[in-house]
Length: 181
Ligand SMILES: [Mg+2]
Image 1 (cartoon, protein in one colour):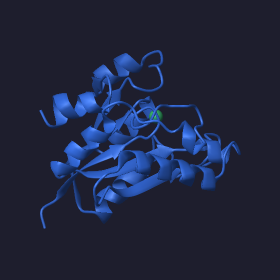
Image 2: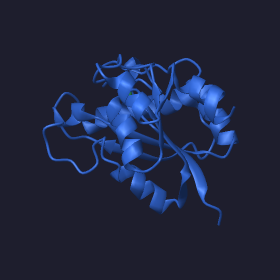
Image 3: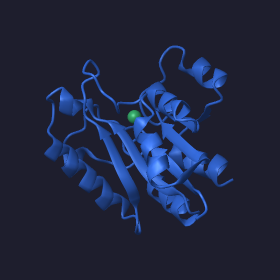
Image 4: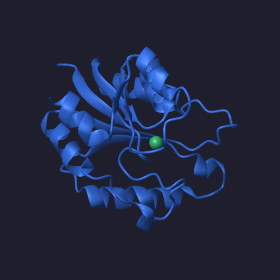
């Protein structure tokens, strides 16, 4: 079997607008163009994965059930053809709690690469925060930074530059101008 290519996608600020601990389904709104971009990636044989830190669960701000309802709402809005997202990896811990999987940990990505026999050279991690980009680099895949979520913090621009991280306005721009260019 030929090794497969994949995208590891941050959720908040990348696929949906970052509502800061978004926890109600009606707070979920797609970033413009994301639906079409994901569809184009699937047509180009990219497998899709979500890798998301949801510390709101560990902080007691919302429950797993609320998270699941938000996820279901996102799927409803995206209407992706089968198979849609191959796996959804959620790290629920508070940043102060010990966590094996919370980004910038590469563990979810590495496990998916092994489980689904992905080709790391044909995989990307895309997200709006430095921890997303680091998770990708830590897993040995390429990372893309998007400006559709949290504003970049002091030093992020330089960090991206020095670590070969592409910067795009949003995920659709990455897909249009880099991935499927
Ligand atoms: Mg994010």
